[in-house]
Length: 362
Image (cartoon, rainbow, N blue to C red):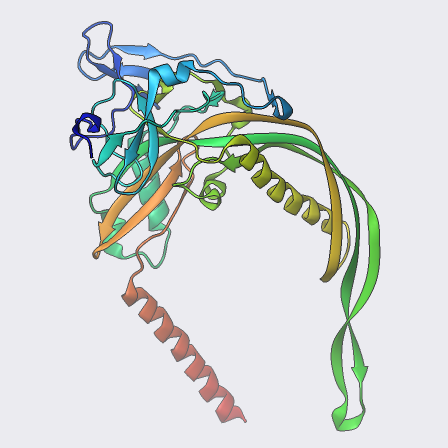
């Protein structure tokens, strides 16, 4: 590791966008609960009035390069978890938002295209902790000790890169579906009811319109996790303003536009197939051939806000993520072996009681 590529690090929270207070010169940070830049030293606040962006980009025109983002940001790499994050060029105090490591070094990688839109954080760090505490208390198998006091919970805010895609689709299909029915066969002691399938053929066309289908462009948070904390109001997102990133960082995208569209088509095709099948009363799908044309394809590159929470319990690490716009949460939680054992014991006890009652009545 070259010394000239090492960044000065500390144990504090990630301060990745460095904006100076015009009053005292101290760093400013964005406060989600106030929608403003805040100076923690002199108390100055600068309200940010975001401009809602409505423009969509034509997919066939490709990505529009904006080199100005490369002039104000840089890419840093976490040697611990492998995450690449985009931070301000002047940032010197960096903690990886995904794993909390300080093993972060500057890279020579280009930052790529500038985001078109951003959804600013609206849920504060303190509110996220409260939301998680309420959320975890509803989980029956979580140890009572954790419900009362989540041990050393650490929260980090980060913007995730996503592509959104619009498309008007027209599909022609044909297939073979089946419906279950029952009939009685045999006689006497051999008389019984069997279930069979009655098949029928289908064909037709289907039109489905997609508006702002979200496709994950990062690598550290999965598409399924993003789906779990969706929706994000991407249609009313703001035109990109780097001031919303003050105090936060942004993951560098790894899924480029064309690959993002390929992923979008896979999801669109699955949705189109479900929409077609919803029109038929069926139980079995023998086959369904669908040929789809995608028209009026639009896209945009958006940064969405999430909080990443981590803590350790019983020598195991637990992580959750929360939608920084709505507060919706998903993640794994500790499980109390004692509570699981008690439930199993109760189920077995009920089974034994029922068995004894049936045995006595037989």
